[in-house]
Image: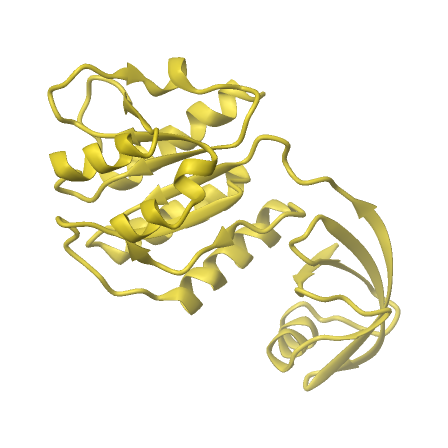
Length: 233
């Protein structure tokens, strides 16, 4: 079944022009075909194509599945990498793993401070459809690291700041609690500065290691996601 995403799905639902063109010209959609729709908020719909035109496709839809939000969600707080390809790869994998939220942050050592919110959102939506999940990973607006720490979310949930400074740290897999939401912060290519690490700790975050190897930012992000997933399986 073909799958499409829409933040709001109506009983009589019209696909946007790009989706309509793709459905008719590429997927050869015809009246009477069944089409799947997800809204990224835990709902899956089945639709029957009642109008099939490259400029406008219309579906008669019905709700067929509702999935509750994850009980112990992960927020990945991460500095976008200098390489756009690597960060976009991480966004795709985060969605495939069902990460609840991505919070991009700019740090003192960030080598790139260009936000591409629209493109990043499209990557998440594409991964949502490909993995046939019902919850879309939330993409928060990029902010300064200290600004995010002061905003309240950092103190509201258990937090972990991963870094490579030669100080005593727990391994993330050992530190993660399995009974509460949490956030994990990953720094840029040059890592968090000592003052940035201390700022996180002042908000209650636990300093953690991801292992003995020094990982790239996007690899560290994926490692943190996998550890969280294993702890909550």
